[in-house]
Image 1 (cartoon, rainbow, N blue to C red):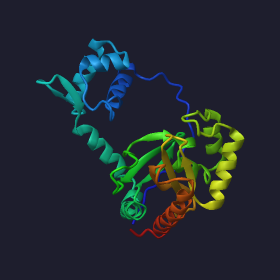
Image 2 (cartoon, one colour; image 1 turned 90 degrees about the horizontal axis):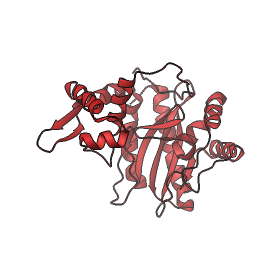
Image 3 (tube, one colour; image 1 turned 45 degrees about the vertical axis):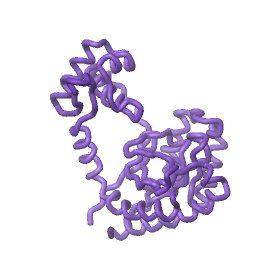
Image 4 (cartoon, rainbow, N blue to C red; image 1 turned 180 degrees about the vertical axis):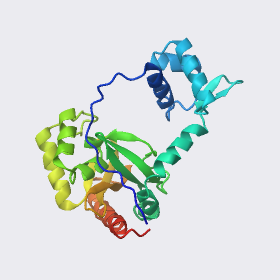
Length: 267
């Protein structure tokens, strides 16, 4: 079976001046988030500081291309099926996810927490596949979410095995403080990566959100290069410091199983 992989990529500086119209369109699409699934023209204009006439022209173009839908009765915009089509085209390139899905489902059931597979792209972890926790109270991670690599377990699991230039690019970009527990010191972060590599899994205990713990382990392709990370996230009330290590060993086993499947090319 041919398998496509996501490889960790260093940060790239874009020097060319982008099209303002294209930026408006992309910013509008990205503005439809969990807190704003439906928006009026006035709200989009206010939130993004785009003139209302410009926003309206851009929305009409997006509507024509079926990326947004306009409800004439409610006078609100929502994302439309065109966005889903693009997402499916993107995800279909990575057969790694086909192999990962059943393992993620098993991992979520065994640990009771939300399981995920993520890859590193330009200093952020992109979550590409999710298996929901069976628990009523759980951590919410959505497909397509992008989080700073330095403060989530998946990012640390990947960076612990990534090439030096990729790690340096993340360090040079700065370790922004996201919560009181975020590691912001270069030396401390490098020590954290060393510890992560030694034990085989990474921990994030409140480094991204104070009440959320993440546990991830690296996934390797046939060439031995780290391709992504497999892990779980849950409330710190269940995944406390002691329990997180127990779950970490389980996560590491699942990541090793996925790596083995990728090496042999078997689903």
